[in-house]
Amino acid sequence: MKRVFSSYNLQIVHHARNLLEAAGVRAVVKNEFLASGMGELPPAECQPELWVMRDSDAARAEEILRFPAQATNDWRCGCGETLGGQFTQCWHCGSQRG
Ligand SMILES: [Zn+2]
Image (cartoon, rainbow, N blue to C red; front, side, top):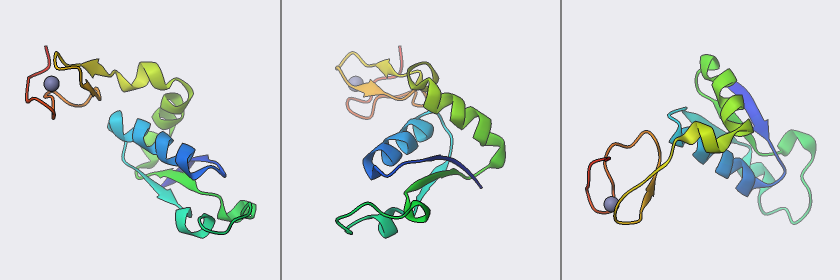
């Protein structure tokens, strides 16, 4: 496992994780419970962190987080749903990718 991202803002860390997952990179958020519910800024060691499961994904993960739009390769279904590049079928209406 390798850490690829951290922020005091848990929502941003989760957003980053979603970007990685959408690109097919397995990632987990650490420290999210340490940092939550404290009402004040947590110390640096309690920042939410994003880790990739495979060390070999770290370089790709950093690239994705730097250029999220290109990396995720989203597509839009005819029904209006936006889907991640790893999906070949719309989860909303069931259509195949065009
Ligand atoms: Zn659809």
